[in-house]
Image 1 (cartoon, rainbow, N blue to C red):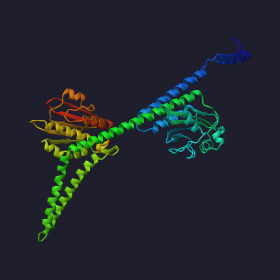
Image 2: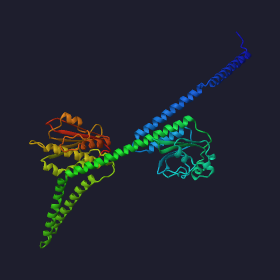
Image 3: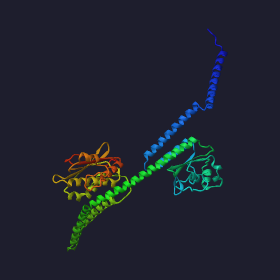
Image 4: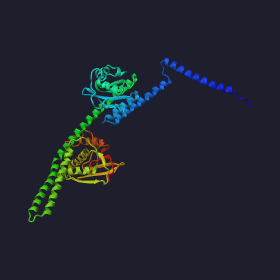
Length: 467
């Protein structure tokens, strides 16, 4: 049996260690030779790949924020600033907007215990000569200060620079402008609490973020202009529609007012009798109050539809909103010999929406149906309005008439702006209706064939279940 030599074993281990040291030395030598030839090492390549992946992920996150927040810039600004400071290994940062010839902070990243006077939100920072901000406004190109504490503006004790250096502890500063066709609209600044200049790649990255912030601002501005124009047009359409209904509204008001006069005269007669018949007079006064409330409700409905208020979404009962519109159009239906029937589902879920806008949709659909049936020489003129639950907790409203129906050509273009089947129509009513329903997360469409009437339906997601 062979005998193991301990010294041989130790020698073997020593040999292995020596080989490892040799491999490591050879690897280090290879990396050194690679570096001398200008070729990145494996570790440098891995770091570059990781950095590139982080940058792409950050840009994707910013783009998602822009897509998900078309009306609110704050989440976009916060996302941009968070990624900018993180990727550039910065400790502080702010996003500034340039307005009224000064910079205003709209987003910032600073320690929780930072003074509110350091990068104050929504307050003008003051554009004083010689400061980094004034140099940015003049040059409109990145301003990179390796050491703010050595900057002349700090040595001159400029209040804004002193606050940033002494209250926030900032040292290295980078300011990148946000430009729209050479117009300065803002800036992004990131700061380090140590003297460590930013690299060219980091400056390029912040420049990309500044461009994205500029795009978000312009997109939001255009979206706001579109919404304001849409609201103006929708309001004008409502007013024009109520103008067409003016005779019917006057008739609706005439009825309760006439009843008030009748009950008033009756109550006087009951009171002047000997002895006065107080109970009968009380009933007549009760009728006066009831009719006065009815007239007030009619005026209130008209006022709510005419008044130009900002869009607001509340939990509402769509059945109740529909009944208010049918009451407003009651006289118009009678004038044209149209019978209105309703089949409103019980225990319908409430929806989250703007009541005035949804009533505008109903008003338009009902009046369109009445006008379509008024052209019939004979036959039944019946308008059917129904509600139900469809498609897993979506409320569906249907308006069906017995009019002349819709041709295939009309069905294809019915909701296009300025397309109309009426001799004096503007062609905007149904287009506005569809945009209102889509803004509520729903869908509006029409079906029907010639001589069989038309059916308009829209669905809206339910809010909460009624009890």
